[in-house]
Length: 471
Image 1 (cartoon, helix red, strand yellow):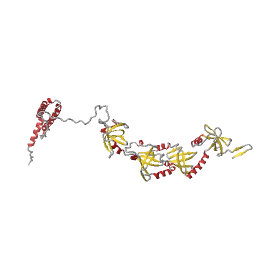
Image 2 (cartoon, helix red, strand yellow):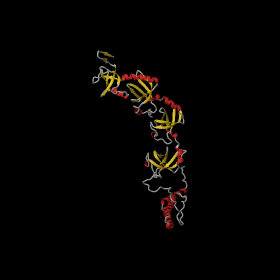
Image 3 (cartoon, one colour):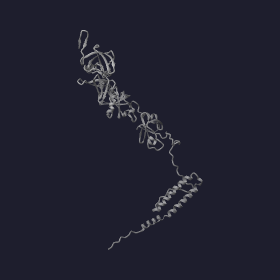
Image 4 (tube, helix red, strand yellow):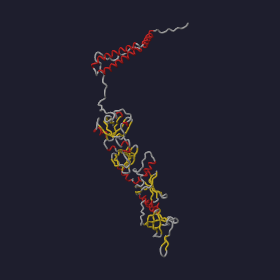
């Protein structure tokens, strides 16, 4: 609305009056705009400028724009009227949103905020919301224990990234719009599901990690699980070493049941337990990495996905109680195959004959040493097994011990004299005779033993005492 005079037209300046303007320049706290063909100068405040620029709105000098006067009673510090573009933009954006919703169009948005419920998009004051449940599998923050802090951190990583979405709900009163990334991928998902067959191989992307396996997304829309038992033929100690989010992975479909898709990566290669016996045998030397400690030894990855056990007794020629005394996790070691059982998927390894020890400079033994047998004394002396003793009391025990001791002494003397056969016969005979005489003299001098024997003999001959009773 304007008022005409004879010379020029004066615009009526009132609250929320629409005017046209041209961007002049940026100042410290906003952008100056020449309004109504030079009738007055307005300023767009810096807060709104930042929001406009974040949404991609162009405020370069010389651009023609349409604005509204915010409040005629409030002026900028330089005396300029405060003007705004946002409300007019919201009106245009809202009309566009309604049109896209009715046409079921796919649109691209860029999240500006995040909360535990999902992602927020602020477009010129209009709030758009992408719930957590409506994110595509590749963006869904899969956290096994439901830790909210980790979920929030994963959502923050999506701020500033373009998402393709569909509008699934509009609240005109609250000016609130609900978006879905899953719905934007609906057609692709249906096409992939129609193509899925057990036995087929697909290119996928790791979209989630769990203690029980890897989640892999096919075509960015269909998600399946590679169970921990289907990742590799070997033992899985750390699942993060076998797959990371965003990593490419080929998978084979091994099951389709009730909407669940079971995948496998290990079935894309030959079972190493069939390859190993063809290429190696007992006695071969294999090099591998120490990957796990157990109380009874260590496991070493020696062939593809196969982990072999080096028992505690096969780690060292010394006696050890802890594998850490010999090897460290991650160490590359050489091992010798001592057991190979492909049927039961077992392989036993040894390191003790391959390791060099600072404290053991001697050469590697070839066999277990055996104690030499004692040779019989030469001449007329003959060592016999101790005879069974049938006597009683201490005298009998003493006699038995003396014979056993004599026999043992004779054996020891015989072994020593084997090295000097010239003196052997005479020394052995003389020594044995001397020991026999000494033991017999000692046995005869023991009075306690003699009295004990006599008492035992009298006790056997003594009749039982008669009982007497008074009449």
